[in-house]
Every structure is written in structure tokens, then in C-alpha cells.
Amino acid sequence: MARSTKTEAADTSPEAAGFTTTKIPKKVYEAELYRLQGELGKLQAWVKETGERVVVIFEGRDAAGKGGTIKRITEYLSPRTARIAALPAPTERQRGQWYFQRYVEHLPAAGEIVLFDRSWYNRAGVEKVMGFCTPEEHKRFLRQCPIFEQMLVEDGIHLRKYWFSVSDDVQLERFRKRLHDPLRQWKLSPIDLESITRWEDFSRAKDEMMVHTDTSVAPWHHVASDSKKQARLNMIHHLLSSLPYEDVPREEKVTLPKRPPGTGYQRPPIEVSSYVPDWASTVVEDPARK
Image (cartoon, rainbow, N blue to C red; front, side):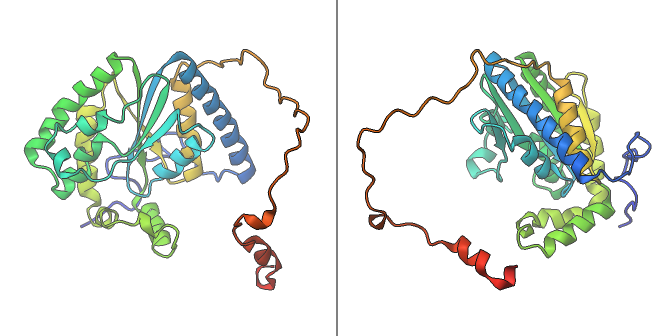
């Protein structure tokens, strides 16, 4: 099957959309990411203080950098406020439910942010291409999804949808790195391998999905992600700029209390406790690691 060697099928090239290919210096990237993460902290405080609800959907090509972006967003946020929803394959019972039902369980309550690492759009992508749903179920999803999302928005949820787009050459290179990296091999699933041979099938499914679900109420925002660093900065900046959050000042300045005087407490001897071995010292002293 012939595939595009430049950009994702049916997508405008990043250059034509106004993106440069200039490599972002590490110091510039880290400084701007840290600044944006500080703003995410302000967003978190605003959500918690006002009781707002935020849903962020991450979809796109396999190996397009969704997981890495989610990691940077949540790095300094409280897991009690910002949750990641990465659902496994549905159980037999869930297959007998209304399709959206198991996703509704993970929607945020007041004062929460939920990041969907893949979402109900599985039905429009992998389920459609791999034959995991019937044509009737797929059509029903495309018809119901805009209505479902309009209900969420009308109820006050801030819904943001991001599609991470990567060229096939870059995707293939990232797959090769996963193949030889023991820390990333778990990311190389059978579905990932299918995405290589069915590139155009996934492109057609994505295009059809966009026609039905890119609405004025819940629009899609595309993220060019051949450069992971660029994609992270662009996506996080856009998310922050799209939400009406404000800096919530603390009512009182936090100060550390003074430690009270001792009352005669004696710590038990160290020997009575079982400590983990000091492996770190052996690593430092190992000549092979110097």
C-alpha cells in the first residue's frame, strides 16, 4: 500500500500552517516548559477554587507524543485535582453498555481536571479500522458523539480536543527506537504495528471522524508533532490560552512553623529497624560507572 512520505494523509503540512522546523535549544525549551507548568499550577488552583470542570482529550497517530505531553502537563499537578484516564479494552459487561457509559464514569466532578489518553474516539479510529465495531455502531457513534459533547459543554464542562499529527517517516523512526529500547518496548503494541501497514486506512477514518465531530461547540485542535518539544509547548500554551483561568492568590502567606521544644522523646536504636541495603553507595564506588 502506497503511503505519503512527507506528511499525514489529508493533513496540511506543518510548514504551510506556519510552523518552522528550527530546532528549539534545550535551555529555551526547558525554561518555557517550566513557565507553562507554572501557569498550569495557576490553572489547577483556579479550577479547585471555582469548582470548574475541565476535560482534555488527547488523540492522534500512534507515537505522536501524546503520552509525553500528558506527562509534562501533570508533572507538578496534584493527582487529586488532575487525573489521567487511560482506559483498557472494554470488558464483556461494558460491551453491553451504551458506548459512552464507561467514559462518563471518568468525567470530572467540581474542581477537577481529567486528561483522556485516548477517549471515546477509539470507536472512530482503531475500532473502525480494525473491525472491532460494526458499521452500524460506527455510524451511530458519529451521529451521537456531537450530541454527547454538546451536552457536556452545556453542562459547564470545558472540553478541549487535541489531535496529534505526525508524518509517517517520523512515526516509523520512533517505532524503531521503541523496538530496541527495553524501557519503551511496552509502547509497541500489535495495534501500533497495524498502524504502519494501515496508514491510509487510519487517515480515511480520521478524516471521516473530523467531518462529523469537528463542531463549533467542541472543535478539534491539531498539533503538529514531528518535533515533540515544539508540540508540547504549542499544545500546553494553547490549552492555557483557551481557558478563562485567573491567578488565585493565597489568603495568607505560607510560613513554616517553629519546631517546638523537645519533650524527651528517644528514638529506638537503628538496629531494630530493617533498612533497604545501601545500593546507591555501591553504584558511586563502582569504577565502571565513573
